[in-house]
Image (cartoon, rainbow, N blue to C red; front, side, top):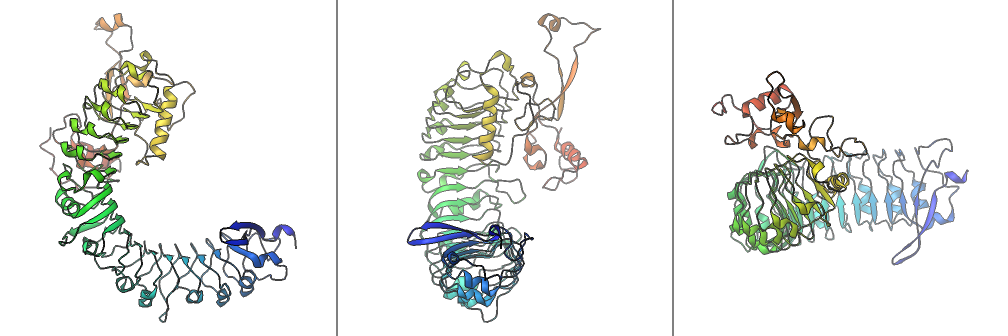
Length: 588
């Protein structure tokens, strides 16, 4: 047999284990002319080293079966990965792997839970992700030594009641299945369970959990049914959670029992269709939270909606370090915001905030401030007091000028003033030494007169930061003109600033005079030679298209809602909310 078709055995030092090795099989063991493995049964040419192998990967080998001899060859395996094959069953010989601790069977074709796994007495980690699991054998037992199980992405409707005996299980992932209620084995057993994921099941999560050690609970995307907010969390049995995540789940009834308050490090209530009253009811029973998410990551019907932050219901505002409240309809920011003395990141983007109180500048530890797509016309005059600020995003607002105190932001690295109403730039921005990323596109500015050094690279750096570090919803909306200097389009090596002086409007395009002529010819009026009229594409905020709920009747700078909706329908773009005939007829 050609040596290139033999398994490649690698020696590997492991803590608490000596002379163990890891093997990854590349190629065929049964047919030298084939790159697929249909059956592994060639035990005659095994090297002695194979008996010492502790970790084995057989990923994407197109396997549909594994022979008994194969498991006898690798009887000392500790970890076995058979992901991305066509397996639908396991032979009884797998019980030869008496030391096996980790078994990964992701993305195969299992329909029934392999009961033979119950005989693997050393098994601690089991992953059967994205298969077709539906059933468990009637006499199914428990994996008594299992500590972590992942069954996400299957068709499971129930778990065996015998699984309540799994006294060592700490992490259980049942997301993206067909559960309707919390399985009884979780309500009656699994006493040291610490992390439970029931997301994407469209189930009622207001049951109970027997384990008093729960630290992480995920109930995301249960939005097809209207639920009662889980009361078991506030039962007095739990005091401190690492994370509670209910993103994109709908709750009709919120009834918090009068019990001792809980502590949560990360609380995610995004897109839960909550109002100020709902948020207040939950926050008032939480003693402290470090990372609070009550915004809307995506535009959807099931979105939170409130005009003011529920600051008075936050029991320990000084504990908050990260605060997300984007796209919820905020119009004002309370002066009580100064209570967030330890906050390092605030995301209030995509709201209707037109001004910030001076108390906002008391946040000495604030490092990242995101205020994009609001209606700000100015920044606080003492914004320079934010001595720790590294990232400031005020893109897509109506800011006319920057306060002088901006130059006091000695740690500022990323400054985004994209799509505002600036007529000129302060002199100190020309040589702001700490800037790594900077963008002033789509303002009323002729950048040729400012000689901003390395402007192209600064824009590229800012876009890269927004995409990778902040993980925002996507790149900024650039003008549709082919001459755009978008960092996401191909450009020449020399940056052109001709489009920086173009007008900006919420309308798709406007007609403007050509002011690039000489001053004498521009001032002289000639009836036979009127000023040349040119049509330019202009910036349109992302939310204008797809969500009419963000139109306000008082916003005179935007077109009529019914006109925009009609135009979007004609283009095949449908809003997420129903527009009733005649609803906006009174808007001129």
